[in-house]
Image (cartoon, rainbow, N blue to C red):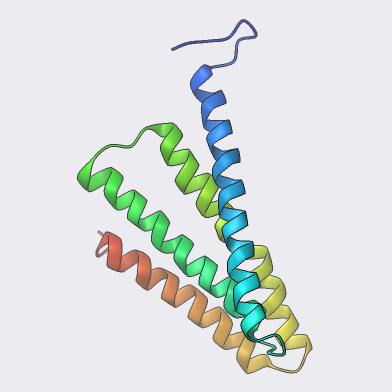
Length: 137
């Protein structure tokens, strides 16, 4: 293990850098998807939530596919896993926005859309991960 003069592990520093890069890329993609979806339906109350839902579902699939590949096909380096799984998927998905948009539906008088948003987001994300990784043991 390589260590700097300050006592920091080089591998840990590289993982921090990979999380930083992946997070930026994932956030930019999430922003782009949001801009695209909201631009298509600018007057729709559900467009922002649809953008968040889309990003979260893709992030779930990418995370599961990375886990599957890393365990079934080939090992991935820790910095690459940090880049994809922590950085990219973390920046691409957004739980806080999901929570806010669900709250906004309730406050705006659309509780059934809020319930649907919660149910669909959790169940479809689990189904995506289950489909990629297989039955839980």
